[in-house]
Length: 459
Image (cartoon, rainbow, N blue to C red; front, top):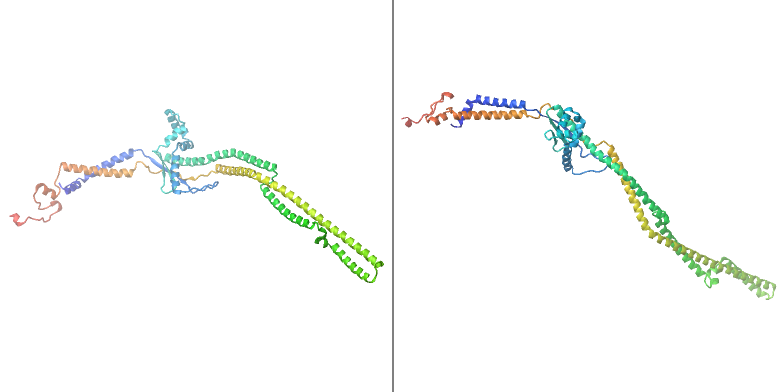
């Protein structure tokens, strides 16, 4: 038999092939009808990876890597027994009489909530799937009851949101309590450091951190005054030398110069009188007496000027000595302050360090207090699960398709087997190959002329 014989055999036995297909489809239908139906409900969670913390200023980088790692971690948290126990408590499954009876019969040492939680988180029931290239997680739950599947999927999503908020708030509350205990110690250290600095300043007569600069400025000012006083004392000492009476300052005194003018005038008058009068004339005697009196008054005026110069020189020397003493005392004070300046700087740094630590603890305490009071997390329930209308298992369409293909395969194989066991001539080619005789006409296909052998061959 050639290929066309088998094709004709299949066409001839199409009823049997169709019957075999229907039988297989009927078996698949019965199997599908008898199979338990499983419904898959899905709730979705949205993660806001770009959400800024309203309290702290921390920001993260690497959004893609962070997203993948975060979603994987959160999927494990949703599948955890901790979340499952919250689901059990929220749904009241630990008060379900049937589950309580099964728990008692199991004799388990686990708490009932943990025992039930481990069973409702089986991989065949709970499935967490991330949505590609998004920050969304799908919480799928499978059950034979569509209502139960929807409630469980939503319950797991809500329990995870509550757990996420708890995981965010509880550490903040613990940190808040710890910082509250630390803030007292920080305040005590600050007060002790400030007390040491104040006591040190009082012991050494320091008003503030800038006292050393003030003392140095005073030393510089006193040094300048001493330099000026030394110059003035030298000048006054030079004036009050051995020939102080003939000094310019003594001779240029206003009183001395006035008397010099009177003496010059009286001398000129006496000279004129001498030209006309004798030496014993009363006018000459009176003029000599007046001239002598004027000269005596001049000598007295010069003595007074010399005394003033000597007094000024002594005052300048005394002022120089006083300023030298003040400069020496101020220099010693500055040297003493320079010795304690480093110690005061160390104490001041201790105060600054304690103040910075106290401010840091206070700031962080305020932050964690706000974090423990703000009901905020970066995950939210995007969609609640709804009871599915169609089961996810069994897959009716897939089973029908496979049953159709299997039925066709069984029917074709059966038809070919029967044809092989009981072959029939169904085509011209099959007849020629079987008998070797030429075929003149094919009555099944209607009358037509066939090619005859050549005349030589007919004869």
